[in-house]
Length: 101
Image (cartoon, rainbow, N blue to C red; front, top):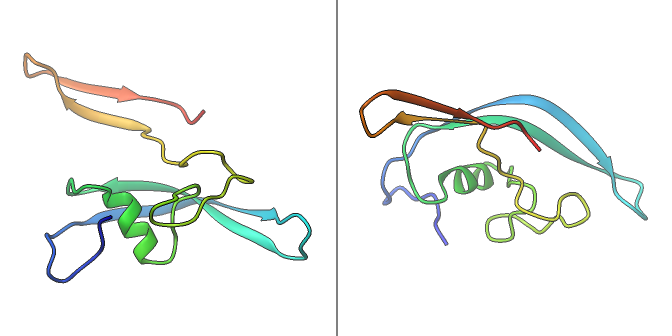
C-alpha cells in the first residue's frame, strides 16, 4: 500500500469535476454522492490517482485498498483510461482513445 508522505517522491495530479451523482442507499434515508472526474497524473507514481484521491477524502468507487468496496454501486474498481498519448516505435505521436463503458 502506498501513501502520501512528505518523505516520499514528488507526485502531482490534476483533476476536474465533470459531473456529480447521488445514489440512494437501500434501506436508508440518505444518499451517497459520487463525482465523475477527469484526472491527469503529471508524474507517474504507483497507484498515484488512487492514492491522491483517497488522500483528499474522495476515494475511487470500488477501491478496496485505498477506499472501500462499493459492490452495490460498481462491482469493480471504477478507473478508466479515456486517452493515452505516447510515441510509436518509429517516433510518431500515437493517441489511443476509449469511451467509458
